Length: 378
Image (cartoon, rainbow, N blue to C red; front, side, top):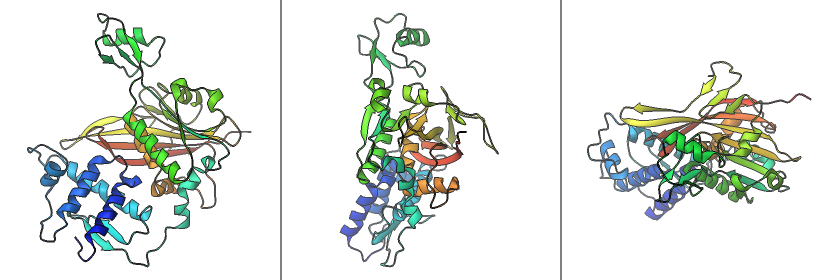
């Protein structure tokens, strides 16, 4: 670790980084970064090995083998990316810079110097450009989340099926699909929320709060178009669980189906169908899912609707968090080929690939893999 800077100043910087948008909900990565800073505090300490990081910082069992499980390398690579993004955005005015040089597991603090360049003007405006319809203050901003339908019996057992979401017919569907004929009465229950949707709401709420804008939260199950039609909406969920998403899915290029995202008009090397998959990276279980971000005009003039739809909560979490980060949104704007002075089109779609580690413990990487600008005739 770079000496000569007060320990308190380094600790304060670490705390700001851990509390930043870049590390929001990244609990494993926070533990690793804090561990590396602590291990690097004394110049005489040797850099920790992958095994030590896995066992001591991540709680992996002592039989952990870094030769077959790349969890530490994957996680530290993600930390490096997030640190770079922090200092390019929220932390651009920091007096100290924190990095983990490639090829070693050491936390290095260096002074940034007084001559650090401010962020590029277009880059600093990227979040404002993307969310401009929500910034006018002329309409309420409302995020609409979903509640998965569970059923419970009189003995405290809860049952859920991916494809059973209709309150009127769900009880009998569930009995048939799960073979519950011998169970007693089943009662509908809405006691649980998707962790991914909750984390998405927290990320968006934080961004709107930092912009000085109120953001209401509403339950899709007990809301209606009469209540929401004059608002700017952010709709979360899938067509199975959110009727608002189901109603607004129209003739766009990408559509969220029951267990996949369909591409109705592939171009270039695109796929016609995008499904989530689970795979092994050595002994590390990983998951790749897809989320669809659709922006379209709202029901009332001047209003907008943004749908963040997927068949997995972590995909919604990853896509939503992505849309609160300055550098990520700027990369999408550049990918769409928009000029600096141009506005976001009123109707477009972004197909996001979201990768998690340990199946679905934590979002590791999000990228936009396709986009469409939708133009209506007339």
